[in-house]
Structure formats: C-alpha cells, structure tokens
Image 1: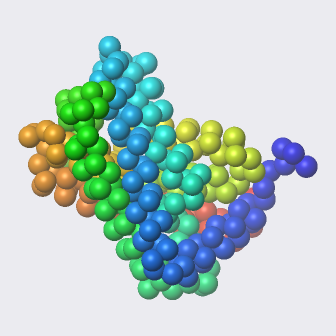
Image 2: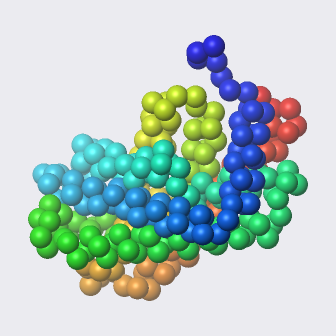
Length: 260
C-alpha cells in the first residue's frame, strides 16, 4: 500500500544483506566502482566553485550558501543513485553484517580499504582533469576553489575530527533513510536534504572533501599538502566513527532489541 512505512526490521535486514554482498564482492569490481564514485562526486565541488564564481554574494550570504550547498549534493546524487561504492556509506552498511555475525572484521577492513583508496584516487584524477581544463573553461576562478578549500582546512585538529563524526553520522543516517524510502523521488529528496546539510554546515566529508581540498592544493599557494594530509586523516577517522558507531552500532542495537 502506497505511503506505508517500511518496518525497521526490514530496513536492517536489507542493510545487512547489502553489506554482506559488498563485503563478498570481488576485488576488481569494488575498485572500479569506488574509482567511479571518486570521479562522479567531484562534480559537486566543481559546481560549487562555478556558483561561487558567478554569484554576486559569497559565503555568509544566505542565497549563495543555499545554492552552493545544493550544488554540493549533486555529486552524491550521481554516486548514490548510480550505486557506486562510497566509503562513507560503507562505514555503516558494512558494519552491520559484522555486528550480526555474518561477516568478519577482516572482510570489513578489506572492503573499507579497497573502496576508500579507489574513492581517493578517483577524486585525484577528477581534480587533475578539471585543473588541466580550467583555464579554458572560464566558469570557475582559482580563487573560488581556494575559498572552498579553506572552509575545510582552516580549523584545528579537534574540530576536524569532531565535525567529521557529524558528517559520518549524517551519511550513516542517509544510508538508513534511503533504504527505508520506497520511491526514487523520495530518495533524491533525502540525498539532497542530508548532503546539502553537510555542505551548508561545511562539515568535512572525506571523499567529497578530498576533491575540495585537492583543488585548493593545485590552485592556491595557501593550501599545502600538509593541510590536505591533516584534513584527510582526521575527516576519515571522524567519518568512520560517526557512521560506524552513531548509526551502525546504535541502529543495529535498538532494532534487534525490538525497536520499531
């Protein structure tokens, strides 16, 4: 019946089934899918820079902030609806079958490593491709890319880690919500709502942020490789904790004990 809610036990079962499938998936398929996700998610930061260049306002202007946050979500829509492998989804998805005893920690580590590295490499290739074309594109200024990067790297290490937890938490909720949603339109709306919130709050997402900060490394002398390394390490750790603990462990725990 249209409009019925999906029982939480069904959502959990679907997430566990998906997680088991991904953990058992053959290596090359994971790598290619993760690389594709790293490429596709780059369109979000690129559109952010275009809008920041063309807009009369800047960060701090409500209209510009909302437009840029919506642009940020575009890459996630491409990746998630395209069913490519994204590390921050698997911080939740792949934890649940381990908690349920259907997969091992070794399998979880293998999945995370393959997807994460291929996501990062895809983002690097996308960034290099756009930087090569940028002088002739004429739609995004180097200053815009630098400004976006500074929104992520101009923080202390504690902030990066804690904000990374919030970003991973939201991405874990996204994995849960789109599994519960039954229509494509609903899923697009959910992806936009969650990921635009991450963009609006300027939270560090390790994979999208990988592209954002790499653009800064390439075009802004004020963003160093060390800034990039610090960002990536702490955002990744925070994302893993946020998705794995605050969603994976807690959602699994409450559902198997009769929640929903």
